[in-house]
Image (cartoon, rainbow, N blue to C red):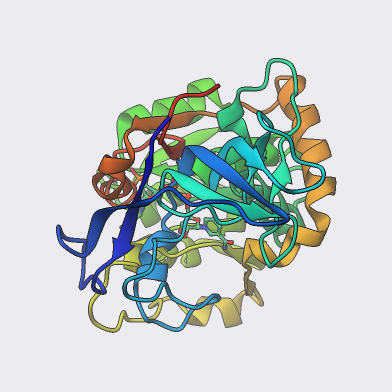
Length: 342
Ligand code: NDP
């Protein structure tokens, strides 16, 4: 148990890749919960590509993290003190946006209320930050609500061996689709094909992506679950079918850009193929979270969905660990272990 609260605070807005000194680790006093509040010791911190967006002042879906503020991030932890009805010492909770810190004060109200995590036999705690958390919900609602898959259709998933991508591909298989992943290494491609059951995977760093997509998607692409953008999106657009759906989940290829990024060169194909491009942000789906959680828990227990997590020790390493998302060094959901599991 610590007596202080280490916090990563945003010191200045990064330009390009995050550099040493953009954030600083400080020692703050351990917070004390007020009436109706809980003190949570954070166990896992979720690292997400959107952390880079929150550090910038680009147009975005939430206010950027203010200079001097604790870096925003989702956490899971254990209740150490409770002044709130319904929460007891020892409960496992998601304390709202816990932040990049050892301790978080949570409460049952506000935009991100603290939620208790149920105990499901055989399901590791980290799964609640991955397949059973925002990551799984992103894959589930994005693919099913916007992708509208039909059995026999061809689906392409970029960042296929990453947190969201690995789940999307497996849901697409459950729905009877042909699934082609794009990933940045042969190991990742082996993982999604051999362990997750994708039909094929293209190492986009080694192959001409448009030509490889033509080979692996002989009937064309019906659904693109887009996590990357840039050259990958262009290669996909060159191979889409009539009435294709492009589910715009993320554009990680451009989050570190320091100058305006050109739009897709094959934009005209959206018109020619009467395709639909739709972006979404997972927080809009929170009212339907229970629907997703029940279905995902069932798939996990039936062994229909596998969930790999990439756990990295030490809050002090959070900034360098975040960099793994941009170099492709992670496979599966990237987490920091802030303190030991109970
Ligand atoms: P991942 O675990 O997929 O990690 C990111 C991966 O992106 C890396 O492992 C890397 O894999 C790949 N990547 C990095 N740079 C590039 C690049 N220049 N071109 C192509 N691929 C690249 O992260 P998440 O699953 O958490 O996020 C995936 C995407 O989903 C992101 O774009 C993210 O912003 C988005 N997202 C959107 C949400 C929403 O509500 N709309 C919610 C959650 C995530 P590789 O080795 O294959 O290159």
